[in-house]
Length: 360
Image 1: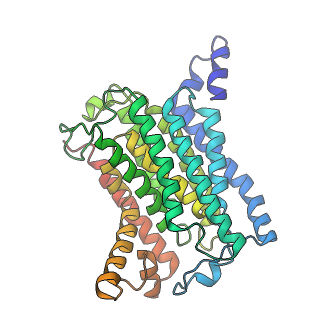
Image 2: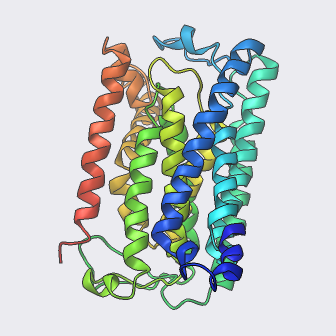
């Protein structure tokens, strides 16, 4: 990071290690993305409304269809750019974990941007075909997973951490690739499915990031990893800085995305942030814990799977509409009430997931 290395030349004159301190850099990262989003977001939202950039969302049964069909879905670009700037400023760029995460952030962001662009320019909602999107996301995910698997030599990097079973760490070996792949792909698509109501996806993203940052701090600390009886992963402290940048960007974005939303993150934001959260959980060896703290995303995904199975097998819908938030919407629940209750569930699940770290 630019400031990280600049500090090496001024340490002899000022307090040693200020810019090396992980807490300081995490807070700086948080405020950097927050300020960027809030300051640039005002200009961006006004510009978008002026130029009437919009996306036709093909959700005929959705109550919010008409209002959101004319709303921009390129807000994810602002989130990605703010995180990239923060990373360059505050992260140790010699840490390979940082580059792995940035690879997914940018790669998935590009796929999402192409999808959003097709929807906007061609005035139809399908964007990239399901197959094309899946292949692109899979290629990016597998590329980084193979790099991690063959280049990382840390002894614990293919072990699986099982919540509540702190003394059982099975070594996955080649199975690591399969688990990592489905974690990244699954989380990315789950966040994408959840991003359907004002503020619905971004708060769980913030909460999951908070949970992962706490886990990264514990696993990267020589003393705390023994106290909580978890695997020690020496490169994970830099993940904290990235997580806090996501939190800052998320809070800033929520300012514009809260009901009634002025801007959406679109596939650009949802695919990239989902992919990043998935990869971070892989790097922390917390794929199973992500299922708990990211439970809202899991529920949304399961609702879609159940709906598809029900239609294929019985010819009838199990839910009025999938994903799950649209089911409650069609039950005449107000959008803000649905979103708030999903937030509450996400808070509870985050606490439940973190509690598994202190139960021996």
